[in-house]
Image 1 (cartoon, helix red, strand yellow):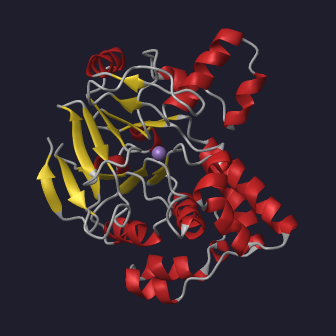
Image 2: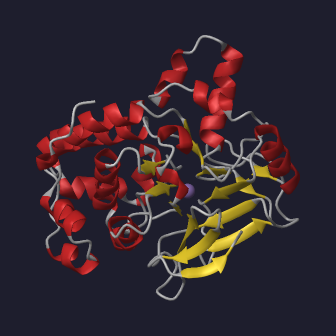
Length: 330
Ligand SMILES: [Mn+2]
């Protein structure tokens, strides 16, 4: 693979990489030029095509992912993201896996998104970004990112070009990851029909290529899995019923289904994000389903946000955004 010319990475990101201080970077943030975005897109294409929709982290690199930070929704909050990635630059973690939803709701979707894309092309074997349900232009139209991009690119022709580029990036992000400690990580949860994870390996990139698959049955399975892995929620109360819901069609899943899914795929637990569970962390189903949410100001200034760390020795711990240990999970 051709090395990437770092001149195309904006100065504020280069400065942060050299001196990872949240407060320093906030002073000199500047938007990306169209030329920089085009170069970043070219490189992202190369990097992301090398990883399938099922990112088996040990296969990407057998060493890096034994000291891994797993991050939930950051939703346009660059400040949370900068705190989260700091231990990576300090050598405290070797790698970071993000579970999607980088844009919308927060006020800095544009910078948050391209900051993370830049990290993933600078360290393709250490920084992995999964696709969430908000990595979708239809949602961006309703929840903020679209409007934010319009403000950055008031000339319509440029705006349309950036929109197409953002969409193309969305369509190349992986959907599921497996960690060396047998955690299955995805944005929202398991698809309705209990599936072998291998199915995700068969999914083409870019994602819109599904429409060209000839086998109708396989096409439907792939499309359903593509939607549901980013949308489905676990059943938590008896009031929730397992039924189709409004957008695109997504479903609730039960503890029993999670167990079946893990057994079928020979994995130990699921780590997911997506729901706005107050408090930022929940062991949703004991020992098998963990929820993490990583945007600090999402609810109010008091609510905490978290990440999950998988260490070399097999310890799995809950961390706050400054990498302090909050709880030993395993
Ligand atoms: Mn979500």
